[in-house]
Length: 478
Image (tube, rainbow, N blue to C red; front, side):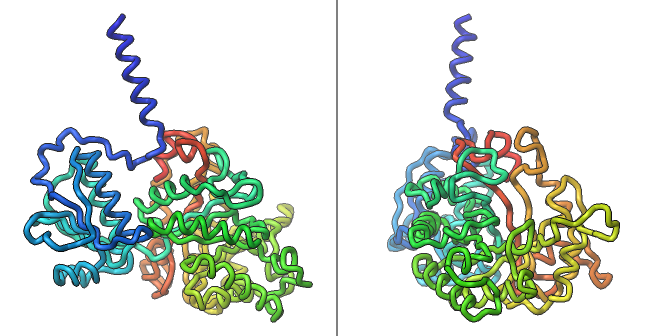
């Protein structure tokens, strides 16, 4: 009986320790740690600026190696002396080349890519940029956490430039299709003051190479653009910047009228155009590295350019002009259909609605506009073919919208593993022009030679300790 009691006590202790908060970044000890070759004696992070992802990479390596291998290494930003002792060196191509010389392997690096080598005395982790260096550090720690101590060297580049998550968080703190508590971004109409959990979320996302967060619901509230909230957005951006993640926001198309006091929100009205340019300048003044805007227009009752008999391209390009001087992009959702269509009329085809709205606009969007397409033509259904819009738009950059939150998959009450669904969509061959045209190659920009593209996942984490509502929900969705 005493043994049983002790056993239960141990289990309860383990359960209490593993509350899901650290997710996959637990850095738990590995049983074969002693089989690791001679561990370098220090960590050299070639950037000492605390907002730099390279600095973050150094801190992550320090924490991870202490947990996984039980070794506490010193950290320095100075490369002096590392020629005499072994070190884990992490930095950008430019910083590493300046300190140690060039590598031929660096020529293969693309934006956000990294090179990892564990073959020589030093462990070398070099990113094409600072974000890439952080990704490389997480990759190295992931290998250690899996007990993989093999000597190796390789280059790893992201599949596509846009790797965002969309939060459907409302300013009052609620979350549309959220099953894990209140918003970590907003409360009572404003951005939260305490951004600790936001930074923790950014850490998780960076470890799986996400580079952007749209923090508010696509059914957007125009008061997000108030002076107080713009300052709050800056606070959020400051919290996620050390993890190489950029902030994005959703906009309400009618904001110039409902929030700005103008007489209309017509995208071809010069005063409306000027209003968006002005408010965008204000946002970028506080968040200079903002990724850009996400816009839901003329969908499910939301306002948009069709109100004024303007095209969807007219609407998207208005925002594109506003963010272009700042290097921003516009993700314009393709989920456009008449939500009052009568099922009694057999000619009504909601599945083809996006194609009907967008096909004649191909090539008319500005270069910094990306059409964000739900993976299926209906609405995140359990089984759908890939949206035909992916092969319709040949002269326009596109991104696939995936759903992590369980809107149509059991509302977080069912155990669902989503990776096979996404793989089926990404591998789907659209056979455009009778040529191999997999969705993954279309959204990467490769198939139609587009400069932008990628993916956006609707995640909807909350204040629940497990982020998504349960241990299993977290484990089977990332």
